Length: 135
Ligand code: AMP
Ligand code: ZN
Image (cartoon, rainbow, N blue to C red; front, top):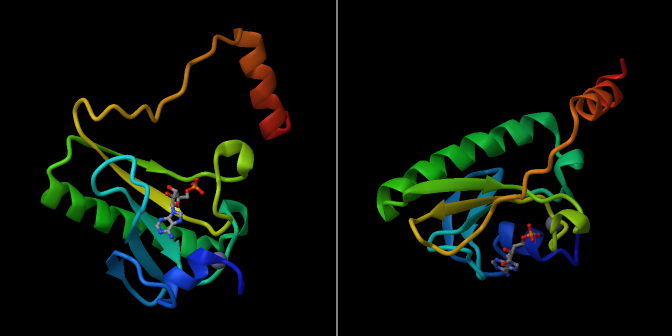
């Protein structure tokens, strides 16, 4: 993907604040961080989103995320940590190259990576379940 900025960053063509690298991934600091230490796991090959990611690479991404998150937790002493992964503009994805956000959380950090719960009826939940599992 010639025009993809995360391809260029992941493959070292554009400099970044790299905090981890192996043959398949580069993990960089987000340049518009939600909190101190906000990082992005970037595969070196281009896949637009979760649905395009090969199974094995996705599993590897989770392992890299755990490794890097553990290091961040140790070094920055965060109180909690969110893993976030957006797919599609509606879900907030702005760069169409798969990436996993590692967002360290600190008490009173002012961030709100939460949703507002809704109150579907029991029947509505069953209907959704049946739609998904095909019952
Ligand atoms: P998303 O909204 O899930 O697509 O996340 C894209 C993230 O990439 C945002 O948090 C941006 O701040 C971050 N970002 C965009 N361009 C760069 C860049 N050149 N270097 C580091 N982070 C970037
Ligand atoms: Zn790309």
